[in-house]
Image (cartoon, rainbow, N blue to C red; front, side, top):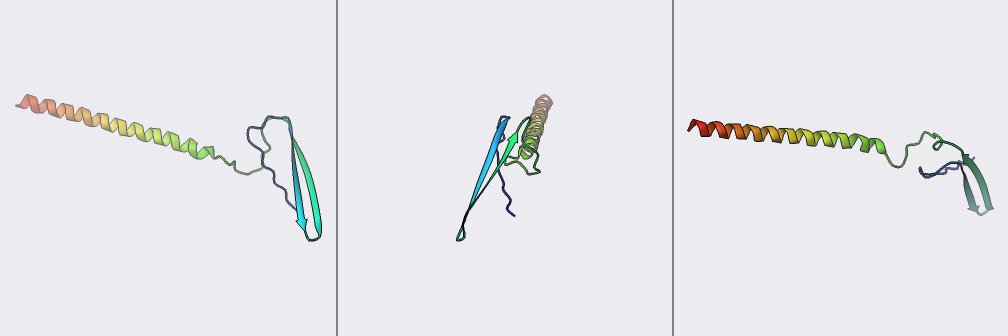
Length: 94
């Protein structure tokens, strides 16, 4: 038994027929197998495979990066405010 795998780009617009042809060359001769599927509506069939482009990792990384930048910006602003208040209190104490 042979298993035939066809990968279809995610931007395929239904309806479309997808045909996959496989050729086996051996010392016993050449064998060819052909299979077709029809994608009719919606997206591609759910095969259980992970997509080649993993959006989940990017979807998690960007918000964490933005939160990190926000925290660092808040700490920087608090540090500047502290320095300004300390400098002002040192000037009035003199």
